[in-house]
Length: 152
Image 1 (cartoon, rainbow, N blue to C red):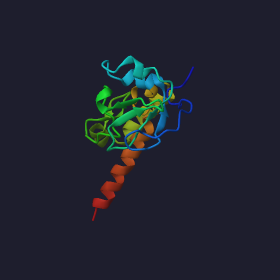
Image 2: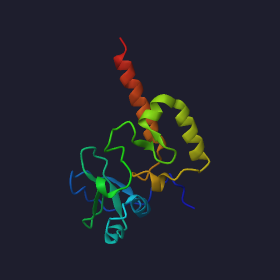
Image 3: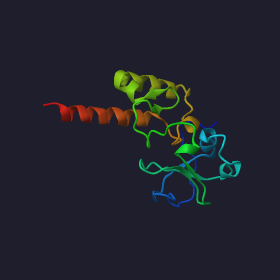
Image 4: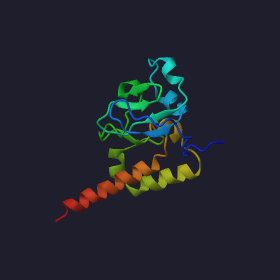
C-alpha cells in the first residue's frame, strides 16, 4: 500500500507553459481528485503531471503533452497561489493560516500524530500531492521571523 506522503515517480521535464518553472511531479490521482467536474476528461487522462508552485502563475497542473489546468480548474484554493488567511495549509485536517496563528505548535503536534497514524490523505487532498506537515512548519517559522523582526 502506498503511503499518502510518498511522492509518485518522475514525470516529464518540460517547464510550465505559462511561467517556465519545472514544477514538481504530482500523481494523476491528485489531479483527478481536485479537478472540477467541468474539466474535460481527456485532460485528466495524462499519466505524468507536474505542479507549478509559482505564486503569480495561473497554472496549477501541467503535462508535457500540452495539458494545463489553471486555478479555476481545481476545486480548492491552492495556498501557494493564494495567501488569504482562510486558505488551507493542511488540506486533510483543515488548518488554515488563520487557525495556525491561533494554535501554533499544537497544530504541528496534532497533524504529526495523524500522519504517523496514517490518517492523512495528502496525496489526493493537497494540490501539491505532498505531505502538508512541511507547509505548516514553514508557515510557523516564517511567522516567528516576522514577529522577531517587528520586536524592538
